Structure formats: structure tokens, C-alpha cells
Length: 148
Image 1 (cartoon, rainbow, N blue to C red):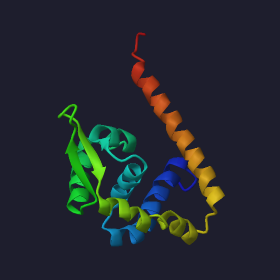
Image 2: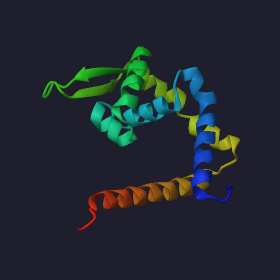
Image 3: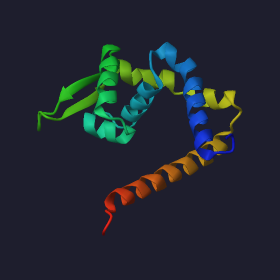
Image 4: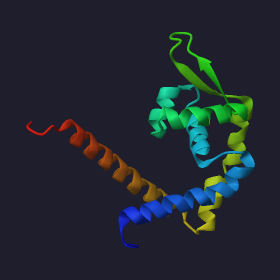
């Protein structure tokens, strides 16, 4: 079992989330909240739909998360002036300043496991490649209809 890639990814994912938790708890963030904030720090004002697409989170997960981030005064929801059906998620001043506090977290986590930044970058590249390949395979499988 321990030589199965799927199992190693599963355990690794759980352990990395657990390692981040120690640093995120004082900021009142879950790991999902953290990656949401990372996304918004990169591109503030995304629509809820665009944010969900980038994070691969459905509305059932994203909506309560955004409510929590709004209650913490990290974000605010704003209706689009062009199309009221679109809701944009905008960082507040508190949400923007949180970036400074959260900035060192990845380095602290990787220091705990003694992972050099170049090794982390290679692993990230490989996992992104694998995810993209699997997404393409899934899209191709969904497009294929028996009898085509």
C-alpha cells in the first residue's frame, strides 16, 4: 500500500494540510480559506463562479467559506454593476494586510520537513502536470460516448 501513488498523494495531502493548520489557526483560517485568500491576493475581485473554478470548489463548499471570510472581515461580496447576477469577492483592508502575516507560512512548513525550495518547486511542477493530464483524460472520457 505504501508504494501506491494514490495513497502517497492522499497521505501527503492530509499531512500538508495538518502542517499548515498550526500556522493558519492564529489567523482564523482553514486550509481552504487560506487557498481562497491566496487566490484573491493574486487576483482581487473575482466573481464567485471564477473563484470556484480556480479552486475547483462547488458552491456548496464555497458559499459557507465566503460567509466565514466575510464574518472575519477579510472579504466582502459586491454585486456587479454590469450584471447583478454576478457577485464579486473583494478583499478588505484587513484581508489585504493578512497577506503579510501569511506570507512566511509556506517557508515555515517546508523548513519543518527540511524540503529545499527547489525540490518543492520540482514536486509542484510534477503534481501540476499530473493534475492537468488527469483533467484532460477526464474531459476526453466525458466527451467520448459509446457508439461514437
